[in-house]
Image (cartoon, rainbow, N blue to C red; front, side, top):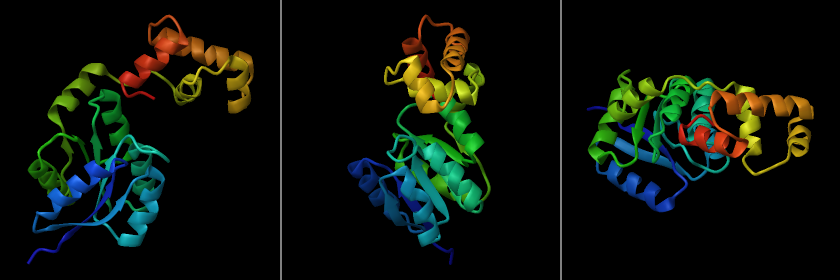
Length: 204
């Protein structure tokens, strides 16, 4: 008799989370042992429930599913990580893989496909949505440095250079340089367009 696969579900939308839990609960060899609605609750839940696989939505309060995946990968490297996304952004796939994800799937994939992905990652395979994989290869690597991403993320709310400099403990000149470089790399006219493009590609 095969042992039951213990799964953690991290998804901030309760209806989606409960639907996923119900569908996975129909599988004989899978048990959802924990559910959380925030990214910053993932690590404690993994520790408390001794899960085999963590299913992580990307867009969550507290921290993203990709950030949570990185935390789990560092603290509990034996736990397999399946990242789910509503948005098929190529940059997300690359970031998820760099964080240690074993699978990357879109949420509207059939439940049977998700269950099969859970079994595959547990046996050591990597599972990636083929359409997203092709898009990520076509898109290429994220051209922005970590600092440029940090400044762009902070600039998304319309903060002035002075406000950004204070928040990020940088000089105004340094902030201006990072923004200017990011705008040039993304071939856009201003910071608002740079934020929009970087978000659309999953680079922030």
